[in-house]
Length: 156
Length: 295
Image (cartoon, rainbow over all chains, first blue to last red; front, side):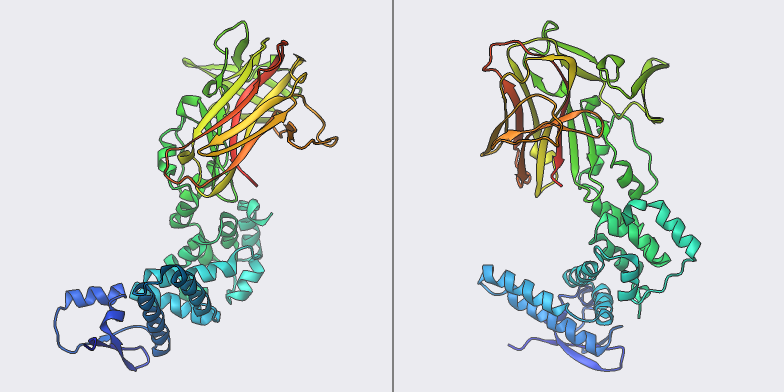
């Protein structure tokens, strides 16, 4: 029995078909299906590019597969390794994945991507963080010094 | 593309996965990062899960306008449980630490004034060199101010009493704390916090036995109750060495354990005893037992 497919129209104009079982993992889609309970072929517009949507589909498919597998012990550690590889991408892609996970409301993907960025920040100096994330400080040197003085322990 | 493209609560989510120190630093990175890093959702994650319950046990209520402010206020010890214990968190990790006051311990014969003498903790007869005590009366309450090197510590942060050993053969001190009060998945160390009066005698004729028991785990050792210069240590295999603390007291390690007891109703029992010698000992002043995460 073939699973029903949903049509999603991406930001870049591309319409993609996604298996319903996968799309219903995304709480935003699930909610909208519950609200519009009709069988007709509705095309759902989403604020994500097709490139990122492909990655999100890949993630959800992998996680669905793993939960339905019986070999529990190995499955967990294999999935962790797969997840680590999945977020081993450049900062811009990470930002897009975070926004997609936030928009589609996929808590475990949001967690995974945010933790990955957190790992890139932990223990780093202010200048290194700015460089990694292309942040231009909007403080004057005096304001910055004042901020440093407020919680000096952060810079010990 | 930079961090600003992300919604603020995503940035807060990211920062909450770092550490308190990193969250402080985020205030300097940019104004956007500061707003996200200062948010209550971030600092709530760093606070102990049961912080509201702990706040309800404080002797003096805390006033705070943000969770970040609360976090830093809790880094200093505060009295809880009618002054029987004090509580604080480790600044770097947010893990819980407690001190049990002398009144919260089981000290054999401590109710008998012939053997043990209870005195206010802040008192010049403790003969602590750089400390002075001034007592003020405020309505019906007495407020003890500790003046040390120009800093004032209002009451509500120090225990009311300590207990001094006058003379005894049977020295036995025990303390207990439930594992569910402590932070999970953390190695904890327990220390007996004491001072040696000028007139101290007989305490180090024989070694004292120390132990820590929790669930099926037990650790035992010995310690000589005397204050030594920690530079001149010749440590024997199981001997612990009393160490000087920053506050002028001395701490004696009683043991350490890994708290992975989750919600189990386990209790940590910590003790020091010298009951084999029949000789008299005296001059040991006890402030309490401190339980803190290992560095």
